[in-house]
Image (tube, rainbow, N blue to C red; front, side, top):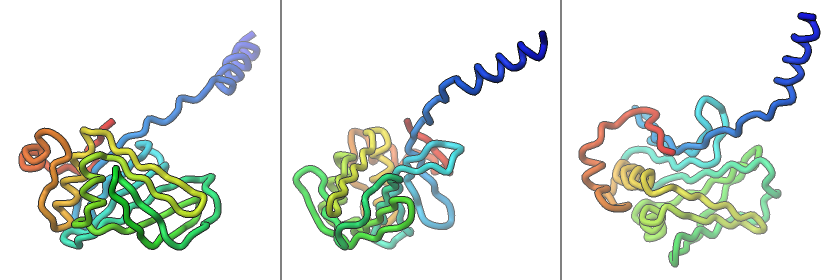
Length: 172
């Protein structure tokens, strides 16, 4: 009887649907680069990262898409609202696409303001969408890269001045 009950419990757990990972935006700051990552916590899963070295004046935007088509172009067209720019596209394993943007470029200012960026390379289109509360972290990241803080919504400047900088601050 116990053997039958154990088998039924094991079968029930094996057939139960697994919960989808919860995706968050997390700001990582320490001695190295500052990284804003769209990730599933406690897993190696990433959707996107925005990374800068302090006072560098540039950010690297990386998107990860396992099922992405093969690279179709060496350059990417980036757009946020009505602002567009091009950047060399670097491709990696497992669908990784990386572009670099100057933090003083109007495109990055538009991205900080809207939280929305589209990257097109050939037949591939990726969208990075940062929710409003987390968009403030884009402004902080821009300031860390060596430029003044851009307001990413009401109170962004006050938030940046009064927040304690932590490793792993998560936003949903």
